[in-house]
Amino acid sequence: MTSRRQLLVGAATFAVGGVVAPRRSAATVATVGSPAPTFSLASSTGPTISLADQRGRIVVLEWTNHDCPYVRKHYDAGNMQAIQKEATGQGIVWLTVISSAPGTQGYVSAAQANELTKTRKASPTTVLFDPTGTVGKAYGATNTPHMYVITKDGVLVYAGAIDDKPTTRRQDVEGAQNYVRPALAAVVAGQPVKVPVTRAYGCTIKYA
Image 1 (cartoon, rainbow, N blue to C red):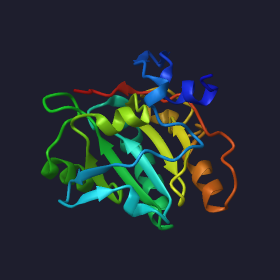
Image 2: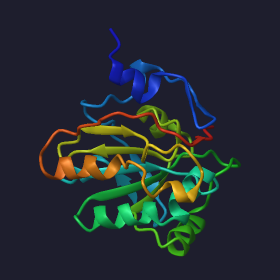
Image 3: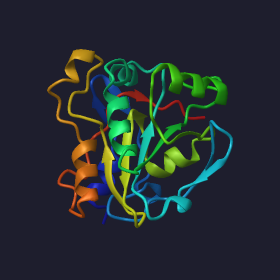
């Protein structure tokens, strides 16, 4: 029987904030509470980054599209950068993933990705490219931003939205219930994540 968590992570079709998330097969989508799918992707700085090599460190995955107004909301407000700095300052690995296919909204070259990191004063550990969408689909990533938290042991413990305000208004960042911060705090403290699954909102990922 398919679990409720499997459905929420990636198998359901739903509309949030006017954005429809596509259906994914529960049988092929990452499940909270299970080992996170491994992958190796090229980074904007050159080296290939493997999730397996991060074992022993907490990892955050942030699916992004710089042209998406929902993503811009969090970057223009400085919210995403603040969480990145807090996380990486604790030794947490922050991997920003771009799954936009070549020629679609959000697709950038390595140089453009690095320029975005610089101009937005972002602080990810690195930016990764998933142009075929293989990794994004394995995680059931549907929207930008779509956030994931993985423990030191490689277990996926959070999947979903960055917060509970599915709007593009920058002013809504203040007062929103952020889901990533408490998830990270719980993992750092060795405690279970109280809200392990939420529905991601934003622009649909422009898969190939």
